[in-house]
Length: 475
Image 1 (cartoon, one colour):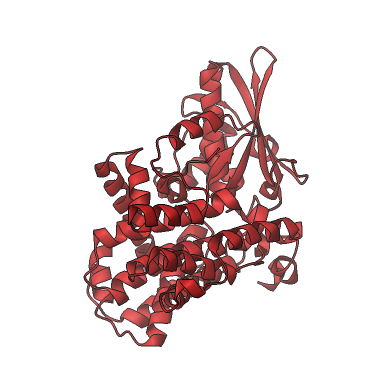
Image 2 (spheres, rainbow, N blue to C red):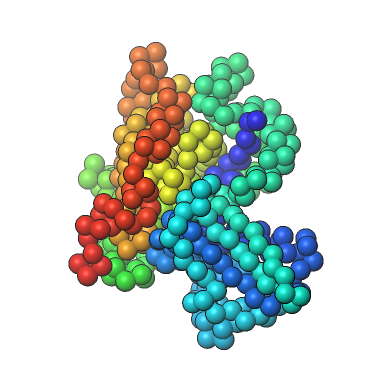
């Protein structure tokens, strides 16, 4: 069965710091509430317990997994909750030892007891969590979910398989592999973005697609803007100082602007020597992931830990490469990026807990490289080559966050992924596809094999690499 994945599945609006450890558990809590509603059990509950397993347990504190499940159980939506309200909601739960379940029913909740961190791994996936509701009639209702990366949540029995099949059947161009996408481009004489747009139109109106793509970009732009204008120390205990603010001040000087869009226009007027370009791209990526680390609103692309790569590369195109570009190019970029991400999700993984950082920064760099290549005039063959080059040079990248926080080395890695994406796009544009030796599908397969071969301590457990070489005391 071909899996149907929309661009809007790959690019989700949410809250930091992690798609698999924050957004996924949050969505799992929402789904648990939905199950309780379907069973007409919400009003019968007197206690809820959450068990976190594997990677969710090992790095859950640093990724705010405990906060995410509390917010989800409270009926809050990560896409729309005012981020400034998060701290207050959590403090109320902790002070009162009470949670407003589904924002309707107040029940006792002792977060130190009712959220359990279990080091053992469930067999289905590294990111497992079980919700148990205790009812007034002395019975229990339990449900287990798996956060598989990028905010995607599944149950082992995959209850949504039938639903996915029904959606997939409406796609005029069902795609699992890059080779299939390329075939459609040839037979239909269309760009990759045009093929993807036709698939999206089978699920939504053109008006909705266009509106949502621009909404996603505006969140990305606002996130970069906030990050570049925020200074101080990131939360979590590592005492990481924000760097985007100082870098931005050094680059833009005394420019006059009062909104994200006027800011973009001012950047277009700045000096564009090679060193300045490197700094701008790095600044954009740093800004996003500093916002992410501070539990700000970001776009999962395809994960929170790698959320800075795609906006940084798109911003590069808008402020450096093409000052005339606007909504048309923005939508084109996001459509291509989303499709490349979906190919990796179907053929490998976008979860660092399953595949290391190659599954996050590697995939985001590949998505951005492909999207930039099409905007720069690349053929479909060159676009897929750009995606392949970017991932090829991230293969084997480990995930070893110090202190279990999405900060070191995660924030800097977004700058590296963005620069590699631009480099990959340029290499592809200067290459005849007939001379390419490695197709994208082979790299997807290789990435998955590498993920399976990788030692678990390098898969977002904070039990290897930098995570143990550098102690919190060193920071």
